[in-house]
Amino acid sequence: MASDLTSDTFLASKKISDEIKADLAVHPEKYTMLTGDRPTGRLHMGHYFGTIRERIALQNAGVTTMSSANTSSSSSSV
Image (tube, rainbow, N blue to C red):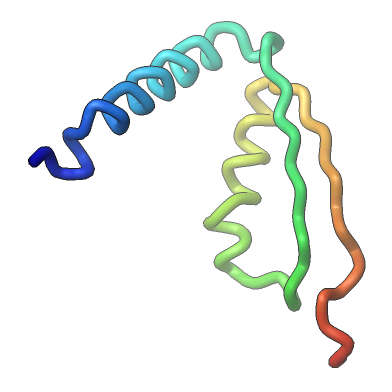
């Protein structure tokens, strides 16, 4: 039985991801990034390292960016 890192599905997905990443560097105008956030509390360093830093890098590379933010809280506690 193949491990998760060598399964056909993983390898096929990785190949597609690598192809897109290579094309993105050459043709960023072909791509649009749709992002969305659902805040569950205050922003912290995990947000920065998890998503925000990469979004900024893609914007700086020339990728069109659209964002949808959910500003309502899922909890009634403040």
